[in-house]
Image (cartoon, rainbow, N blue to C red; front, side, top):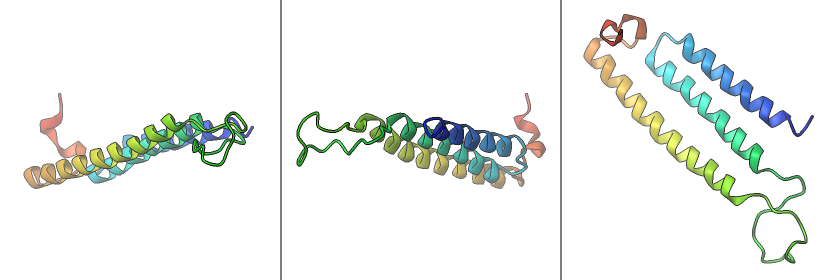
Length: 116
């Protein structure tokens, strides 16, 4: 059960973010929900890189092959994901503010120019 739990938690967080995104009535709320969806990827990446009994991949005090090591590539991807997520969130919030200034509303249903 413990091996599956992080994946289930990641999926649950993603679904909560998608539900909030689908029911959002404000652009800033939608951006927040999109950020929640991205948090699910952090949990997923950390779950993929986790090894039971593993240690950090620093070999200063360990004999080679004496203990399992966690995957440093996945940790680097998670860190990159955090940085990209913060950047995308800042950009989307700036766009939401500009849309609200230009159209006078941040409700996606009232933005008739965005309809196809």
